[in-house]
Structures are given as C-alpha cells and as structure tokens.
Image 1 (cartoon, helix red, strand yellow):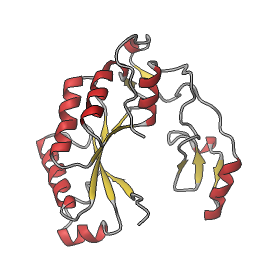
Image 2 (cartoon, helix red, strand yellow; image 1 turned 120 degrees about the horizontal axis):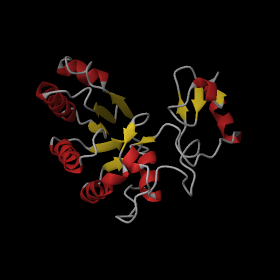
Image 3 (cartoon, one colour; image 1 turned 90 degrees about the vertical axis):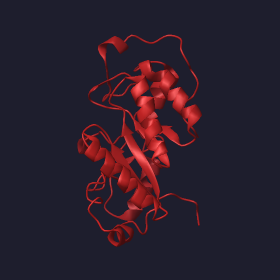
Image 4 (cartoon, one colour; image 1 turned 135 degrees about the vertical axis):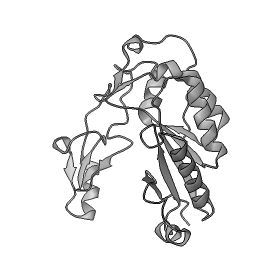
Length: 219
C-alpha cells in the first residue's frame, strides 16, 4: 500500500529444485527477487536454461524478477546483447553492477550504457558506475561519491559502514538494538573522491576525453 518494493537478491540455485507450491511459499512476502547473472553462475547453456526457466516460474507467481548483472567484459556488443536477452526473457529490471577489486573498463563502454538506458526504462547502473560516467574519470572526482551519503551497509552482526566493501574495523556504528539505527543521523562519514576498491585497466587510467556525457541513470 506504500508502493515500496521489497527486493531480495539470490543466486537462484536453491530455488531451482523447489516445486511450484514450495517456491510460492518461499516468495510469498516478496515484491521482487533479483537473480544474480555472471560468468561464475552462468557457465554454459544448461545454466542459462535453468535461469530462464526460474524467471518464468517466478513471473507466474506475479512476483517481479530483477537481474543483478555483473559487467565482466568490456565488449560493448556482447554487453548489449546479453542485457537485451534478459529483458526478452521477461526480467522486469536489470541492475548492471560494476566490478571491484579487479580491473574494469567502464569508460570504454559509455556508448553501450547510454544506448541501454535510452532503450530500457528499467535498466539501472550502480552508484560507482554513475560517478565514473558523469565525471569521465576513475578517481579525483569533483564531487564526493555516495559513501555514507545515499547508502549505508549493515552486516549480519549489526556493523554499519558507508560501503559494503568496508571491513568491520571501518564500521561507524554497531547496532545493539533496532532503535540504534537512529544514531546514524548524528554521524559524519568521510568524503571520498576516489574509490579504494576500484582498479581500472591500465589503458583506461588515462582520462577518456569526449564521447557522450549524458546522465545514464534514472532518479
């Protein structure tokens, strides 16, 4: 009634063998489930068919299906085709996620990101990708990133950090009770103008000039 979407993320492996009635029971309070899609989980055609069939089964339950797509290649044509395939199979939303801690080539794919954003209303990118595309560089940004500003991360032990990649020793607060979350209002996090977990490929460290500079995310 509040038009909020309860979205959970899963690799889908535990859902595949479930019977339809059990699948319905497991997902009964879920608005949308986002299934991970990457080269580790989708290794061959068998994996792809299982992913496709799971999407169809969940859709029959009137539950939205998202896809958390890990951008692992800088081949723009392949990237576009895979995203198009996900939407054609019935996925409601695709979240293209930036790789961290391994080399990435985001700026070389700016045209592909722009094309997909213009074509699909529910194609989304993460905050780090947005930051890089808007600033046209991988570090030394003019504006601070979303760290502890738009998003926070809470782990299973109650530690709150400004980034999901931060260790517990960088936690700004630990929740002992649910109401402790209100304490977050009075805490000031550091401003980050570069991502400590981002590793651009060597040929992409040089700032890319020109190209398309439109905002490729949606509010």
